[in-house]
Each structure stands twice: as structure tokens, then as C-alpha cells.
Length: 469
Image (cartoon, rainbow, N blue to C red; front, side, top):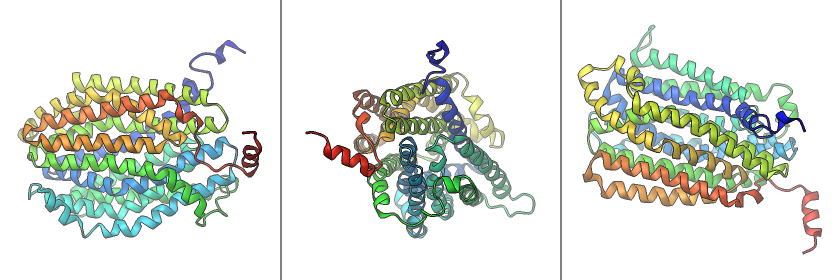
């Protein structure tokens, strides 16, 4: 074997192979953080009330959609395992089942619109902020089906490792969203000034555009023919059942995680407008480190699923460690900048804000970014290790751990509400560190090596039944 095939960079599932899949996804999910960053920056320029409202309204919206998005997004694992098992005819069917989940969830999303005022009144937030929260959430609900459908469509490409397509689509969506944000929030080029409602509407329009682009790509040759996309669009109940069985815990894990953070955000809102806005600002900066790591986690999940179906759990493990090394280097750099140069990330927010008002906000946010720096490496660990074991099918373990740790975190925040904002951030830091350590230990234990989510071929089932006991 040539020497260059044994290096860390060029070996199977080494640096080059993992980076080829992970880098486009890193950029792709990074566009989400840029999109959120721009959205919140414009809203801060518009009003601090709008920024605080976007945090609470956005968290409630994500809490509502994260279960179906998590289930539909888990189609990535099915596509990866079918691809690794060389069963292309099942890839199209799995994609369509994920898209049907978005269609079925649409009435629930629309039913949430009239309930929004009651939820935010229960939260007891500032009366000046509450109308913004309600407006933002209600408009976002119109784009909720698109988020679920696009998660399944995206899996058709990410599960096969064709991640450049996803990157291009997401970058285009970012550009559309940013332009519409600027025009509709401030009322430029003849458009009416819509404020936070304009920000939400820009997200909705760009989300449905994303669905339309993926539909066009799905119906192009040779993708349409190679993966039987024209003949497998109907509901396949057995396959949909398998997706719900394995993807359901993934969706519930998203829901528990989001609901826990949403409840904690609601509690922060009771501390005051400054505390709420500073937390929103710190989390907005945190997206620079957190969201791109989600793409690296998807890459790890994809490679684990593919290699397990090829009978190479050793390469699946190698891909995970390689992905983790990239993630740790990136988050370590982010942590360093959060501590040493926090104003670098606050510059854009400062540009259009009231100087006196922003000064108070900046002082608190700088301290909160030190908490973010403290948990960043553990956040990378929990994303990569959870992605790896979920790529094998170990979704129930991830769900149970997330449920327990989230319950403890919310309880501690509730009991320590009178201790102030920093107590809340100490709890969040402990929460994330605990998840990173627990998922890392689960990966090291190795139970995931014998798992799979796709059904066996009839010939495989016959071989197993004929094998001696």
C-alpha cells in the first residue's frame, strides 16, 4: 500500500474524505447562523424590543416545529444506510415519506397561530415586548411546513454525501432572506415598514423558495431515475413506520432540548428586558460556533450510516474522531475570540443601535460570552458524538439522556430564579457539558456498532434464519 494512503489526511474516512462532506455542510449550516445573526442585528437596529421578542418568539417557533423537523431530518440516516447497502431504489421512497410528514403536520402549525397570545401572556413578559413576540411567532407559523419538507429533501443529498448541492441552495436562501430582511424591516424600495413582522415574512418566503428549488433538483435527471423519485411518491406505510420508530426519538430529543431552552428563556424574561436582550445577543453570537457544528454532526452521522452498512464499523469510528478533531479546532478558536475579542462579534449590532442603550447591553453580553466560551468545546462533543450514534440508530438513548438533563436544568433555573442572570448561565453551561461527556462515553462503549435502521433484504433475513443457533 502506498505510504500516502496511510496518513491521517488521505486514509479512508480520514481528514480529506470527512472534510469533503463536512465542509459544504459546515458552510451550509453556517448560513443559518449568518441568517440569524443578520436578522437579529437588523432587529436591534430597529428596536431592542424587537430583538428581545425575536429570541422568545423564535424559540417558541422552533419548539413547535422541532419534532417533525427532527423526524423528517432523520431520513438522512435512512438515505445513508440505503446508500451504503447499495439499495438506491429505497432512497427516493424514504425521501418522500419525510416530505409527507411536513404535509401531515401543516394543520397543527396553523392551529398554533390563534394560541400565541395566550402563551406569551402566560409567560408574563414585558408588555412592550409581548406584541412583537406574538407577531413574529404567528408569521413564522406560515413557513413551518416548508422547514419540515426541506429537511427531508435535504436528506436526499446529505445522506449520499452530495453536500455541495445543499451548500449552494442554503447560500442562495441566505442571500434572499438577507435582502428581504433589510427591505421589509425598514420599509425600503417602496415596501412598507413592517419591523419584526417583515423579518418573519422574509424567513417564510425564503423557506418556501428552498422547498421549490429542491423539488426542481429532485425532478432532474439522473437523480429522478436513479432513486426512483417519480414512482415512490406515495405513502409507504411500513417505511414511514420505520422512520417514525427511529426518527421519532430524534424528533422528541429536539423537542425536549428546545422546550427546555424555551422554558429557560421564558424564565429569563421575568428577570427584565436588559437580561432578556443580553441573553438574546449572547446566543446570537453563540450561533457562530454552534450552528456550523450541526453540519459536521450530520457529516459524522452520514459516514457512520454508510460505513456500518458496508460492514466497516472501524471506519465509522474513524470518521467520528476525524469529524470531532475538526469541530474542536473550530470551536476552540471561537472560544478564544469570544473571550479576547468579544466586540468583534458585537460590532454589527452596535452599528445601528442607540449608543447609550447598547452600552449597558454590551457590558452584560461580554460577561455572558465567557460562559459561551466555557461550554463551546463540550457543545462540539455532544453534537458530534450524538450525531455518530444516531447515525447508527441509537436514538432512544439520546432522547432519554436529553430528557433527564433538560429536566434537571429547568428545575435548577426555576429554583434559582431569585439568584439572577448569572445563575441561569451557570446552569446552561453545566447542562451542555454534561451532554458532551455522556454522549462521548456512550460512543466509547461501542453498542452502536451493531445497530441499523433499514429493513433487511429477504435474502439477508433467510440467511439469518438458516444460521445455526
